[in-house]
Length: 206
Image (cartoon, rainbow, N blue to C red; front, side):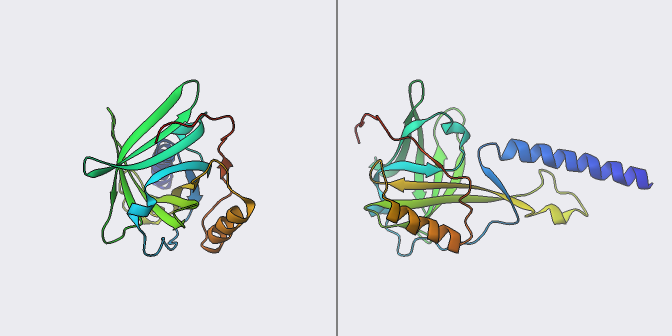
């Protein structure tokens, strides 16, 4: 009976591990539940619109090998369209529709366009609208299948994505230090941030 229980646990642990590998391939996996950082107070979606440049970000599978990455938020036919563009071997673009939640304006729900639409939720943690923005997403990882007696697996880990955006292709050191201090104070992991190459880029249309 004891051997049977051990095999049962090992099998479910293997299933859970496989789920983690599939689920977090485009995000950073961290222990514990998602933190609860403050979002941008009195957020203005209108002021947030326009072109942003990715200066630093954590790993995103869809953007592997991309450089000169821009993110354009613009109003189009009564909705906000988001286009993320970058250069790999050829110019690449991903499109989504953004919904700014009225009750929580700094919460952005993105619904991807294309043959395999996806949905994600991002949060604007900090921005002065004219120079920089910090965008973050987080999701607690739960077992793929509810397992009786293994409730401790819930919120055992979480995945995060983090982007530092600028209105220009570069960002001064003082602004970066301000952002890093904010992240550290609010327990947002920034160890996985990597710079996005923005040199020798051709400016596209807005």
